[in-house]
Image (cartoon, rainbow, N blue to C red; front, side, top):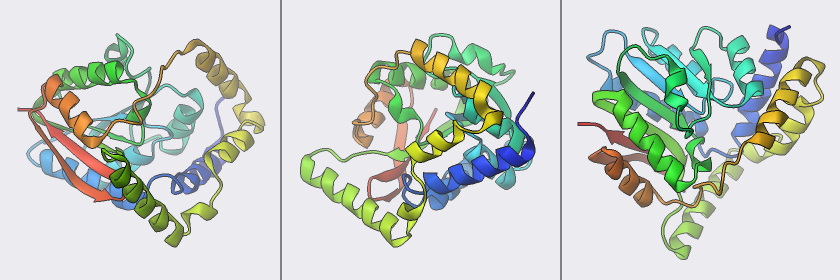
Length: 255
């Protein structure tokens, strides 16, 4: 038995609110990502987009609204978030269950043509550096000429003073927008786990978490280090197109 539409709607809406605590100017970041996708796919009749670490479909839904002719494939490893997305944002994307960074993760995507763009927001930072480089190389192979990888996340500056200043600016912005008044990550998960409709999904989630060895994530990597890895993976054009505090949108374009 699947999750009801009412239950999915409630938990996704609460997810949207709690995520505002963590992604500085989250809606603006989404809009900038969509701006870039719109630009790089302007000549595509039916662009093929990949949403990496899609969660419950937040970015996929916004891209579907902005580019109604696009085909979107959304991938994540979390059974709870995937089912919420499949139910609440059913028309936004085709949702795929896979672990980004695994050796065969791209095989599960079922792609029948090159990607025009791959997007991600606050999702790739958990990958350890070797897995991140592997993922970037896989994406370079999946994207067609002129295709782009657009990644919105928090990228610390190199050096303690710079990193501390950018993080502080982001925190102050979040305080002014009162995003900190929303429930946090831990309370969202704790309360969702008590919902009877999600019990089986949480059981699956715990089994997977126990089996996964995700290593020490790459959250410490600077934007400059990401750019180095992207160039090593075959993306020769890398630039930051938006920043507020340490929140950025990084774009890498394939020749």
